[in-house]
Length: 196
Image 1 (cartoon, one colour):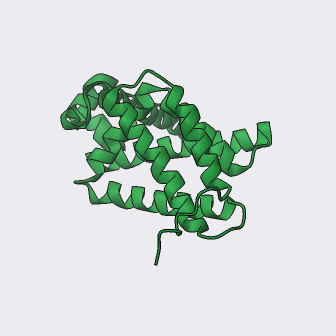
Image 2: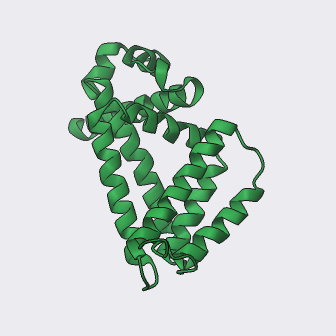
């Protein structure tokens, strides 16, 4: 019984730490994130935080994995609940995240931090390689599926960056973006047509 209670308490503490780190990244950006700041926000001692996350890389990696897993879970729920194909569900979930300024700021901050953190960069590289491959497999058969998948992911992520930088409140472009993404997914644009 003690082990289960201890595991539950540890999981609750890790969740508090992740929420504190998420809040700091969203509010202040990547430049001011420190373990001390996260510990203070989570109302923990630095030693207690470091018991769970010995360094910032471990914390950031777990934060990113939780964020990516949340996106994966939302896509799976959407395919199950709405009967959408994985491409349409993925586009809908990711565009819905564009409506949440905290979500776009969080991922923008994590991408920025990955530049100087090899462990985080490797995790993002693996995630995007897998994401592009999964989108390519889900596309209707046609030429240049991998290129079309890469463009779909790039358009989604690029739009997220622009919304973060500009603080865009208007949503009209999201409908146009969704239309373009679905057209690209269905082979409406041939990214290989400019090749010689």
